Length: 244
Image 1 (cartoon, helix red, strand yellow):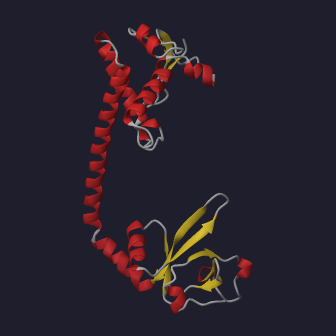
Image 2 (cartoon, rainbow, N blue to C red; image 1 turned 90 degrees about the horizontal axis):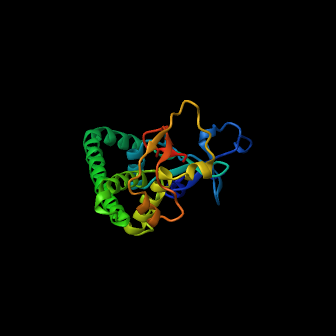
Image 3 (cartoon, rainbow, N blue to C red; image 1 turned 90 degrees about the vertical axis):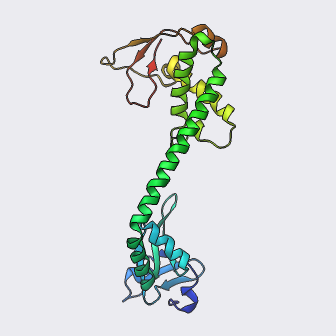
């Protein structure tokens, strides 16, 4: 079994925990690994294991260049458990992380504020594009603004994977799809027909007025806007469900 020596220490291997039956007698489990193309290898002398989660420390160790990546195969993916690296390098990286924590915290806060400003600019751009797509008559501008604002907020929500997050479509295409999706969920019987929702007796119906029903009908043929029976949301970011 190869031992961790000068050749392997600089190889930046990907290693996996060895099976119990493969570990020679007298070796601890965390000292023996299986490396593709090499078979069983031992942890180099003076190296320690750093669990995943210390992002700054992990990044520094990789920059400094001497490490092994510890992996574990799962049924449908490969999990990263952490790194093996020289103990002195791990200690230095941990000390550097502690010394720079305050500065990095300020940078993270500034980055978060910058991302939020960028997201707000993008939401406004998408909202304006939706307004242009709707092209409602002036007397229905208030409804157009309501639809555009809600559709943009829903489509552009971070982490949802909705149409507003894709980079594969032009802004105008995303605006059209976002508007149609919001109107379909908010003003038509789409969810009742497609999902077959069984309303609870405690959910009290209301009525959504649609002063621009004729215009919506012309722009979105086949979808049936208008006064409908609508039921309470089950979350602040969910559109109201309607069952005409």
